[in-house]
Image 1 (cartoon, rainbow, N blue to C red):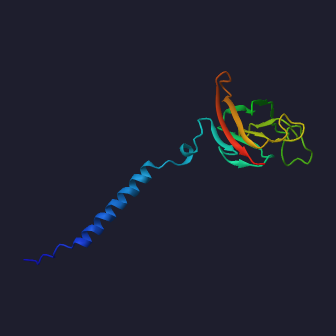
Image 2: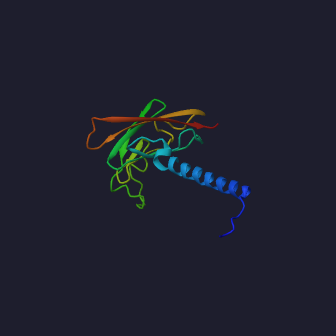
Amino acid sequence: MAKRRPFDRVQFLLSVGIAVGFLFIAMAVKNGVTGKAASGLPIGIEVIDPTTGSRQLRQASIQVKLTSGYTGELIINGVAIPVDQLTASDNPLNSQPTSASKSKNTVFDPGNSTLTYQPQEGAPIDKFNPGTQTVRVEYWKIATPDTHLTFDYTFIVEA
């Protein structure tokens, strides 16, 4: 009959510790929130810049990437900014600037479903005053323009 090894308490405790560690790792991986869910953005909005709560300079631009098939507009600090639609002639490789590239309004690029607003002199908002800025994205599916969705967020402009 084979000789039985004595019970090694240290080895047992190390084995239990390692097993518990693997269990915690598995639970963290299973319950981790990443990607779109971690961003807190609603359906229809893929990316916002500046991000919620971020600190920016007074001349920061606002960019909202919508899901393909959506369009919308920006309301910044209660001011509805008119929208100019980018067209095929508004190619950034053109040497002559076009009306949309010089726009003082929100520019919607249907090619990548992006709304962009750059504060500048003569625009509805020429620069952001220091403090909290509120952006409301009002957006809708192009196929159902009567059903509007909204998303509000804020960012901070430093002096």
